[in-house]
Length: 576
Image (cartoon, rainbow, N blue to C red; front, side, top):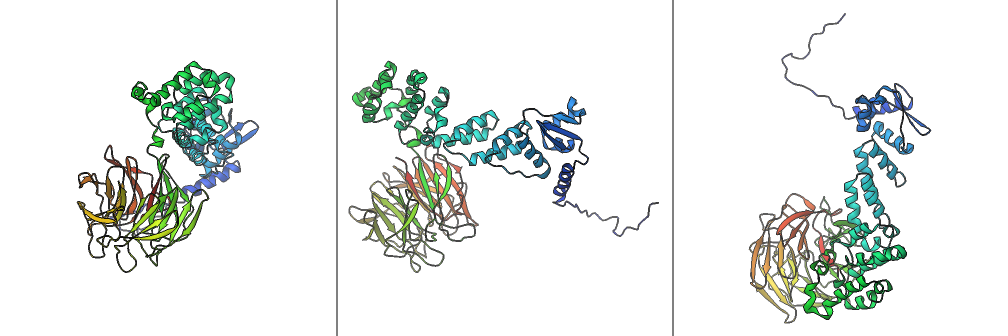
C-alpha cells in the first residue's frame, strides 16, 4: 500500500536541481572491476593461448568498436559465452582489459609496442594515441627509423610525421646508426631528396650515402650513381670534390659517377657554364640557409616572479628544450651570442638592478661569471659587432641611462663608449650594416619614437627618422636589409603593431599586426623569419610565440615556450 505524502515544496515551483556527482562512474566501474576479478555476473570468457580472461560484454562493447561489432552485429561470437582470440599478446590484452574497467594504464618502454599493436586490433584509439605520444617522447637517433616503420605498419600518421621530422632534424646522427644502414634504396633516396635535411653541409649527405653503400658494397655499389644523382655535388667545395669524392675508388670505377662529378666541377672550372647544371642541384637545402637556435633567458613566470631558467628553440625541428639555468635570477636582462657562447648581462633579480655578467658554454654545459659592467642596468639594450658587445642605456634603480659600454669577449674587459643623446630604458637595439641602432624606450617621463644610430668607426651618435609609433618595452632585430621594431607599449596601449626601417630611404614602414599584443617582447631574426617571443598583453605574461615571414608578410603561430611566461631576453645562434 503506497503511502501518500503531502508535498513540502510548492507544486508550481519552476526550480530544478540536476545532481551529477563526478565520482559516480568511477565508483560504478570500480565495482564492475571487482566483480570481474571475482568472476561475478561475467557473461564472456576470452581465451588467448593458455590465458583466460572473464569479462562483461557490455563493458567490452562500450570500450571497443571491435567488440561492439562482434557482439552487436549478429556474428556467431555474439551467441557464444567463450571465444578464442588469435595472434594477440596476452599481457598487453590484460593491460587493455584493465583499462576498460579502471580507466588507467601504465605505458613503459617494454610494453608500448605490444600495447599499441593490441590497441590497434581492438580499435581503442585513445590508447593508440597515448602509446604514440609515449613513443614520440622516446625518439632517439638510434630508434627513430624503426619507429617510422612501426607507425606506418599500425596506422599512426601523427607518430610517423613526428619521427620523420626528428630523423630529418638529426640526420647526421641518424645516418651513423645501424637502422639507417638497413634501409631500402627508396627509403635512402627519400632522405637525400629532402630540402629540409638538417646537415652542416652537403658533405654530410655524401658521407651518409657512402656509409650505406659500404655496409653491403657487393650488392649496393651498382646503386651509387642513383644515390650520387640526388646529392647536390655543386654545393660542395672544390677541395672536397677533388680530395674526397674524386679519390674514392667506387666513384672512379663508375663512368656515371665520374660524369656527375665532372658536372659539379664545371661551376668552379667554367663558372660561365654553370647554367647547364640543374637548378635543383644548385639549390641549397633549407637547413643551412635559415636555421638557428634562439635562446630565451631569464624573464618571468605566470605569477610575475623572476627566473634564472633558460630554454632554446631549434628553428629546424621547431622544438623548445630547457638547458642549465643561470646562477642568478634575471628579468629585463640583456642577452647576446658571441663565438657560440651565450652571455647574460645585468637585469633585475626581484630586489636589485644588476651589473653582473654570466656566460654559458654549451660544450661543457656550464655558466661562468665574467667581469661585471661598470653600471647596474636592467631593461638595457644589447648589440653585437664581431667580438664586441655594446651595452646601451637601461635603468640603474634610480634613473634611465644614456651611457654605453663595450665588452671585449676575447679579453673579458669593459670599455667606456660615447653616450646617446637621450636617456633610454626599455629600448630595443640591433646592428644593421656597419651601424648600431637604438630604438624607442622611455626616460621615466616620456615614451619615445625616436631612433639613434651609432657609428663605431667615428664614435658618433646620429638621430635618424623616428618610428611611426612611440614604443617602449619594444623588441628590435634586423636581417641583412631592414631593421624591425615589434610590439611594445605607447603609454596607453599594449601594441600588436610592427614596423620596419629601410636605411637606404631613411623611412619607416608599417607591417601587418600580430595576433596578440606584446610589450616586453623578445624578438629574433633567422633569415626570412622574425620571431616575436613571449611578452605581456596588458593582462598576463605570455609564453606564446609568433613568426613573421618577410616574403609572405604573414604572421603565424610558432611553438610556445615551455618554462617562461614573458619578459625574456633573447639571442640567436645561427648555423653556418
